[in-house]
Image (cartoon, rainbow, N blue to C red):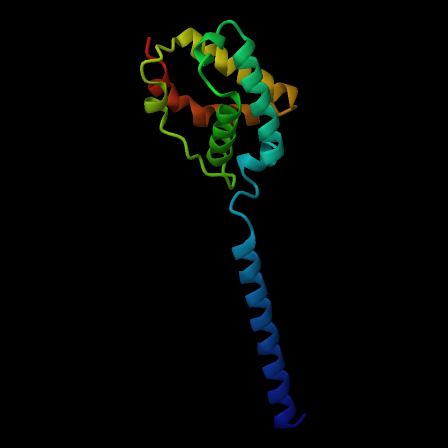
Length: 152
């Protein structure tokens, strides 16, 4: 092989490696950070929307919690909760509501009411066939909020 042919083949190999590296870097940059996350395990946005809508329905009709939501706009609450669950689980949403302490101040939410809502969330996720261990991962992210919600 002549020197020129060797140089051309080497240049072609380097060009191929550079193109491959560029494509791999681009794929990495465009791959959402939430792939392989709790968000995906929950079923993505569509499923989060479904179990959240069901949660809100249960919350508004269960006598243990309904009285706390008399002045609440159902659609707005659903949207805020979807965004919160989506963001907490690693999804692409952004929660734009106020923090838990501020949004629950002076509501006098009891431990019993809080636990009822947790049961409703579990029921809503059960109805969407979300595995128990996946439910627990979401609940573990929500649990620290209890101190800002329960007042008595």
